[in-house]
Image (cartoon, rainbow, N blue to C red):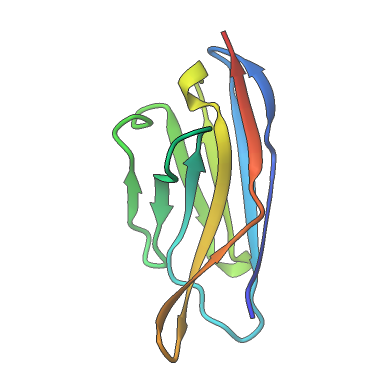
Length: 119
């Protein structure tokens, strides 16, 4: 079983920075892709950034050049450095850790952390 915990959200002014952290506790389970998603009020959950176990990254166009995802494979931890934050970045940010299962890939979600950017 994989347990995912996020931290690091908060309130920041536009132009400011925040760093989110996420750790997946996965005893004897291999974690493949880890990533960040976000969901704003009234909107669907959307991809922010992902980091594969082999080092490949992927970013949403809206955050390219402002957000950086990094990963510590040994600790199953992923970070999201968010710079030049905008009010439209306000959302609940969720961490996801993908693990293999008998039925395919399992998506393991954290509880989410609120990021609020004031104008």
